[in-house]
Length: 116
Image 1: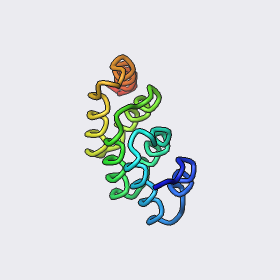
Image 2 (image 1 turned 135 degrees about the vertical axis):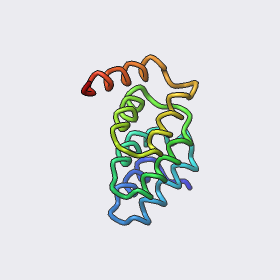
Image 3 (image 1 turned 60 degrees about the vertical axis):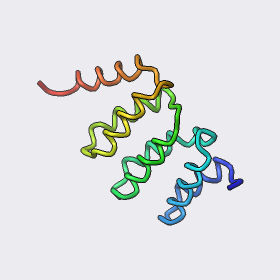
């Protein structure tokens, strides 16, 4: 498990699905030591593969601290019709380390964009 975050991110971007899954598993095992990978994992939630998206949601739920930008990105993903993503966003917004102001501002902005 001594792989660096940079190496794991490179593996995460592999075209080989097994390599991607293994990289995410290794990051999960590292916990918040792999927090630099959070933006890439969030971007992966846009993947077509529902099983992989589900696994990414589980992996992201293992982290305890999200940057303001990561919270904004996650809230933006609420537009995707996926219950697991909604559950993940709820989990992250509820973390004591998440700045509620950022979450509320992002949600408010998103709601303003919705048609009446």
